[in-house]
Image (spheres, rainbow, N blue to C red):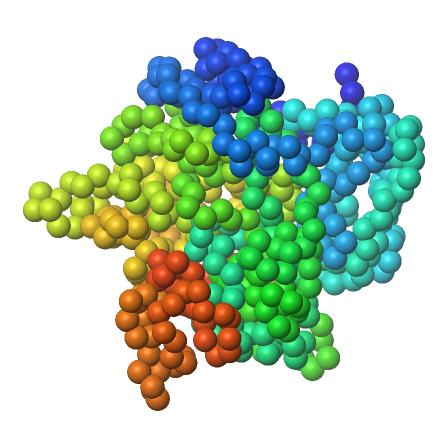
Length: 530
């Protein structure tokens, strides 16, 4: 048997993570689905978890056709047997690795080969790994670097003994610091060009205030269980317009939007969190002391539901999985499969270490809540799920947090949740209070026994201050300049236009700062010596 480069206990855990629901009939259907996935496009059909588990019984679910977007995303994947030694696509020059913990670096190489990874620069370290099988992927190598303090400028050099292509690969300008994973749907995505106060941030970036912040936007990928991999494709080239920059790791620039402004194309929630963390640390430093490098990994997809972000082995577990709010199988939309965004956008980071996760999602789960108010008014507290019954969002959020911590191998990983903002109810205002309660797994507060080491940023009072069909301000006292109601106006200073109206509040600065304040209160992060 090939040697697994992961330590045995980790290898055992990863092998378990690669397996679907522990039910023979369910696994058979999934295996049959995998065979269908390799057939022609016309016959392709996704049965990702075609048998769902409810109270220990299998209930069939209708199949749905693969979308063109899905097929295109699947074709982007890096071949598992790429010639020579390569890094997984989550790694790149300019990246930040988590400080004070063992940093895992991994990728692919030829079968039977041995790879050597050398860290050089402010310190030197060299380790080897045999190529073997890991969590369902063949021809994988992995090296765990020794823990390091924040800072430094390093080069990673990868070489291979036994590869047909023996060319070395080098990653430069690598440093250590605090790395945060920001994820969710469109309000997690909303980029800085749609955020109030963005020009102030751009000015501070140009001044060099956030030179220690580096950013990475994960490409949108939805991947079936059959094709799931820990090895990510290389990122597409950087795109300075459109809000989907890709391009690997980038440093902060704040010049003209759509030309040379990496901040404008990055998640506002995530950026403002980092701003607050850096500003706080700077207030405590002595003159001349270096700021801790900050790495921001942004992985979001607009209009998605939580079920797409949870591994199916968790979602459909016969004993511990989640049901919909009425006790039936988990809700499944007809565009992207449940678990597919976890596979495509989270799983490739599963061997990485993070300081915290920031999660802003839920608007598109609101329509699953039941209308249970007898007078037709506001729904009851259980309308969006009951944790004890394993139903609805109250179950989903707890399983999401627990499963991500499991895959990231950190049972205490701090996890931030943004409570939905006013004006973002997607046409279901009667369920907003119940949904915010479900976002706490029914605890009514965070952290709690069900969600330990979880913190919240309240959003109920930070909806957009002006609607999309009325005046934006009342000069001269408004805090922001006036703007008319046309979303298609050019991005001209000082106006900040909407993205699809006030369903995407431009007030992300409050969200990011509240996340940072709650995170510091929970962990003490950002304090000197922490």
